[in-house]
Image (cartoon, rainbow, N blue to C red; front, side, top):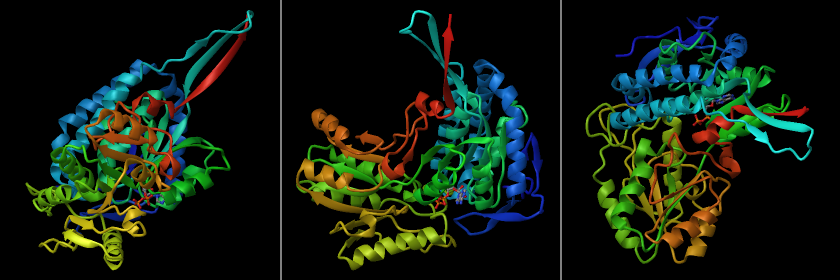
Amino acid sequence: MIETLVKSIFIDGKWHTAESDKTEAVYNPATLEAIAEVAYGGEEETNKAIQSAHNAFYTWSEMTGRERSKILYKAHELMLEETDRLAEILTTEQGKPLNEATGEIKGAANFLLWYAEEASRSYGEWLPSSIKSKRMLVIPQPIGVVGAITPWNFPASMITRKIAPALAAGCTVVLKPAPETPLSAIEIVKILERAGLPNGVVNLVTGNAEAIGSTLLTSKDVRLITFTGSTKVGKYLMRESADHVKKLSLELGGHAPIVVFDDADMEKATTLALASKFRNNGQTCICANRLYVHESVQERFTKLLTEKVQELHVGYGLDEGTDLGPLINQQASQKVQAHLDDAVEKGAQIVCGGKRWNGDLNGYFFHPTILSKITDDMLVMNEETFGPIIPIQPFSDEESVINKANDTDYGLAAYIFTENTSRAIRVSEKLEYGIVGVNDVFPAVAEAPFGGIKQSGIGKEGGHHGMHEFLEMKFVSMGI
Ligand code: ADP
């Protein structure tokens, strides 16, 4: 299905191999078979890509928002036309079930649409002056060349969520996708190319993450790094960008709690908890990592959830009826196993799942797992599992569960299930998270700001807030 690709580096409107001719294999995580070879670029290619983005900035940033939006609209249309083919590529390189991949492509296209609309609504301000002889203007201007570093868990939507607002604002981009999932990135760039994006406005470098990253970080021409990935790499990017005082927009790890109050609709709560935890096999920074259920409903909730979880099918993402695909690689599988072993050693009980899935595929699959008898010292209650394990712990009162939910260095997303509106508002306000879902576990949409606090990140993606990341507000003070 996927032809072997070697020319995966896109600079100034042309596709290239690496200068060294080195390539890197891309694997299907379900079968562990190599499905393509992509160029292994590094410093040299990244420098050229930055130069190309720098040159293109002057013309792209001077185009009107309306002119830029036309290209984004066209890219949105092309992406939707190709949804099926793109979803198949996404599943093949990432593993998620085809219906989830299809949803991701549509969501990714939606970022192009939303920022196509936003491109011509980049307003400034005319400030009322306190001095009669002065007039004061605030004008939004694109920040410049942007380095965009994206992860493998959402290989399409994490790219358009960064690129679409950057382009709408008038910035140019050097994109570095995750080495596990470069094929979706290549397809998105091809779509932008076909949509008529001028040469150099978006450049793509696949290859050596450290070399590409450090070249982006040490270049004076790159004014902003927008990154989605681990907190560890996010901290490294912060440290290394200090010398040039680069602006950063970071979407990092999370450790999302779900709190189920006794007044929740149990049917809805179990369906949504399942959707939050097992979507993308638990490999989502906003998916539930720990579940707190009120002691009076814990038994009923756990029984209902277990029944639903036992109906989930593990398997090949391209096969119909698959709910959980493989974990991305062996390292991910080892982490899930380590979290499980640690919990069991410390007294957790396996309610269902609790082992690897041994089908006829070579990838790293895991049965969806529920754990009870959970204590706070377990790894699963403190570190991001990034796999299909959900620990359930009972709680007795609102205040103590809020304290538990907030007792983490992370602050990306938290969820509460309740039918009591006052409680929904009260608890939402007290949760120390960038995003709170109330009877909702899908808060990532084009029109709303997405982003964490504490060690989960800096800045927002999505909504008009997402576009502000790529704009500088220049103050023009005029004496008249
Ligand atoms: P994960 O552990 O989920 O793969 P990472 O933070 O390691 O998360 O990866 C997210 C993105 O960051 C990927 O594109 C990866 O290649 C990139 N990355 C990893 N290390 C570096 C680095 N030192 N410099 C720049 N990018 C990096």
